[in-house]
Image (cartoon, rainbow, N blue to C red; front, side, top):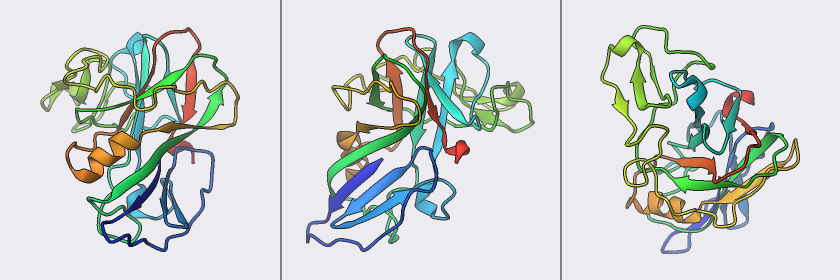
Amino acid sequence: FAIKAYDEDFNFGALSNSPSAASNNVTTTISSATLYLQKGDGLTSSETDDTHINQVVSVWNYGIATSSGIDSTTAKSFIKFPNFMGENTDQVVPKVTVNKAYLILYNNNAASNTVYAYKMVRNWIEGTENGETLKASGESGMTWYNAEASYNQQGENVPWGTAGASSTTSDYNSTKLDASGNAPSIVSQWYQYDITSAAQAWVNMTSANYGVLLMKDSGSDWVSFDSSESA
């Protein structure tokens, strides 16, 4: 997620860093300085929530899986950077103008089918399992049927509007953030998705930051991006 932004007085920060490993990252570009936000780099703003859901094993949670999968009908991926906005020097200040914002993902499986990004309109919980059911008291996380599922139904399950986060009214906005999408056809390569409109809405605080949904319209190729846990 790469952001170039300025405020109403055209003030810019002076931040500099670089990505350390092949995993999802957020890049904030302010004037000529660039800040790479990547989970594990020590910056509060780099916190990353990413996971996927799989209809084939519908009650499993993948919150700490090292990859995030996408299939045309049975698997979808999610990612959000909940702390990228704020008043600290390593954050984007609210109400700035976002020139460009890109979600940048590292591919670990060649696939010819195009992946598209969509803005989520419902909150979701990443969870703490690696392709297993929720198994600890007090644990919560997302599954195919629930945006927020709880272990043994100890808490209140919050279902998706439609199973698989498929509702275009209560789960995600059906407008493609990057109309052309991107087909991750080469392994060990970075692929980017233009999510400028979503980032501007988050920064304007006209839309809650529930992150991005990644999915395909068609095709049988399994897409797999490194998750933040792979760093």
